Image (cartoon, rainbow, N blue to C red; front, side, top):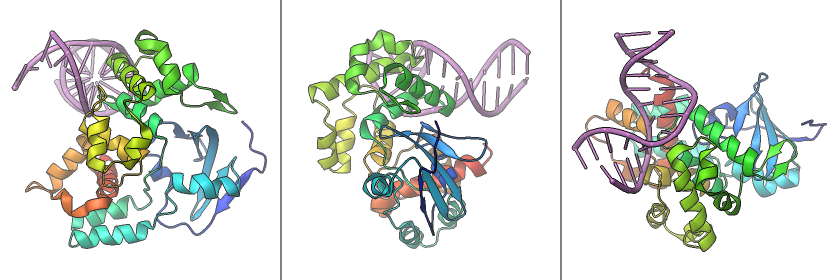
Length: 277
DNA sequence: GCCCAGGGAATCG
DNA sequence: CGATTCCATGGG
């Protein structure tokens, strides 16, 4: 893959760190290389990011594509400074929340592709990040359309036609039947991406949880990272630890409303990388 | 309620 | 080093 002066640049970025964004457990198809650049595939395109201070260079896209797609993918249409102020104000200057926001100052929630997120977070259950990445990579390599520099994430159609036994060969174990069920539901219309987009978050959770292998944690990850639902609050082991450690008396999630999911990411990243055990 | 599924990473002794 | 634990969900 060669990028010949084929890039755009964004200047004066605030609340934006490409390394934090791609290292907070929301995305499984991007990796840092030895230069610190981050490359991967999304929306059927291989792209590469290079950030130096408050300038971001994006290789392999045009300004027009940035305006139409990648700006939203990176949530650069959202004022995170304002969201941070609101979170701190709502929490009455809670010291943990302030510290978590300070620590993960450059995190943004990516708006990724819904079907890929459904599969990715089904695969993620009871699993660790290196292996999740391997399985998703194998799915793309084996069943995805080839593009310049890699493979697209495969459609529900090809995954369904592969069948559970062939999916098992990708080392996804007992999750193969869950992927198969999700693919079947997409093909038969029992699960409709556009319908989910129009449901309120609670109804969308329930709809997603009709799929075998999707429980509350996986459903809220899908909504947060694949549908831009920043009110979804996935509770995984790190969030559970964060809440137990810092709020032993209990934590009132409801007051954070539509930004609870963004707070979730600050807390996750803070707990994951600052607290040993 | 409890254990297992399939596997590799992380952590322990 | 080998042994054990971890991980989110559903089914027996």
